[in-house]
Length: 619
Image 1 (cartoon, rainbow, N blue to C red):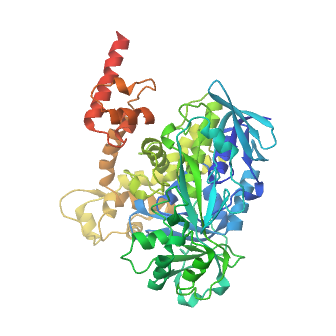
Image 2 (cartoon, rainbow, N blue to C red; image 1 turned 180 degrees about the vertical axis):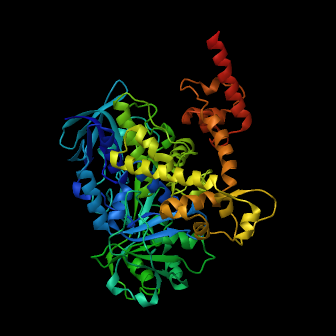
Image 3 (cartoon, rainbow, N blue to C red; image 1 turned 45 degrees about the horizontal axis):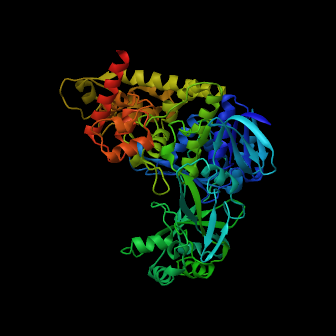
């Protein structure tokens, strides 16, 4: 009944946390209500997208399981923004719910040092301000060195369907009441958020000829850096739209939606609103897009992405049948909204450990995020740091300049949330460097050093890096003079300056295939390695400027702020900033500078206070 790390919750955050802890070598227990629910996609059957796909690639680079499971369960792969620059391209995959779930369970089952316990958690155990274990629903006590809480929407979860409400963590599953009360008893700042899901439709009753076909990429591009080929059958999605009749039905019945009746106090995700919110907020639009996404290869169930709602059943079927292609549609499961408790994430450190309660880590929707990918990324960080804590090792931090994981965590612990947080590429200042294609180059060595990357991935990574280094050296050491380029019919300015292969690729009339004819040695490299050369040429000139920005950022991130600082004693700070700094307790000057309403003069005042104290201590 004793473990190094206990993870509570078997959602996407929980399985990543448990597997990361176990990969590190910690004796780990994963508490879940039912093993059969591990890997369940409670909302849309898809992984990735803009920003989110970057997170999945980073999880994979750190030897996490989400990317591998997606490749095992994916039935349509698409690169979003494929026509734009590599920095904003987002890999996305439609998944077969059953195949994805089976893949996650198989990966968990085959993870060493990990035990799954099918019990609800009722209470946390503390001693001297530190977590020491928990009590399950049967009264059994389990002791540990650290706990990671990943309860998703289960903390006092309530489902709303029209005027009907009932307690649930998700449809058909009980909420977590005892654990929520245990967290409230700690004096944590907590609140309520809400999210929702659309109805599930019977695909046999949809007029597919009336909808627009949306095929996937051919060939499909895997998520995981380890996957060589996607072997599942691939299927298309379809697109349809709401119309003025749909909007009229929604407007006439808006008072019946739970989100408008006053029954829900929590705020929903602004970037993924319910259809009743869309119609109200975007009244100038005469239609809204709906993606009809298959939920599996052996089921007719269709997920209509874009029309989540809390309307009662009779209104749902009425507005659904007003949509082109859905005139005769039947419903498998009704849509609903769910409201749940979350913890203000500004109470967390960069390791996702609570600042005032040692050995207690939080990850996923409990921190105010939405989405499988955001949850999984937090789970990996929390599980890794909980395991390192048990071995008396320093925590691993992820910075904004290094990863989308770093952007996610820094946003949460510095700014907090007023609505469910969702990742976008626009949140990252250094997105030219933080691309989905180079996630392994940025993070896998960190994962190796941190102790969570297994031997197989490390060997594949090292071989890849060696090939990339060889190619880049070849590209930088081979030149053409303007005269040589002219003889090859390349339009190069006659300025007397030699240009290497990277510089040549920046020219509009020079392609990689053309360079292969001039330099046959390029044919010795596969497409994955050559892609890095093309991307290097695309951002040639911009990267030096971004590197300079990152160096400036890093200087501020290296100036640590002691936990013992009393901001009320810092001269020149307003009461508002002193209160915000006291609540957030930033780790560095860089983090302090990103707090809302922070000013340059306030940063100067903090630096002056730190220098004054340093000089006083030295004296």
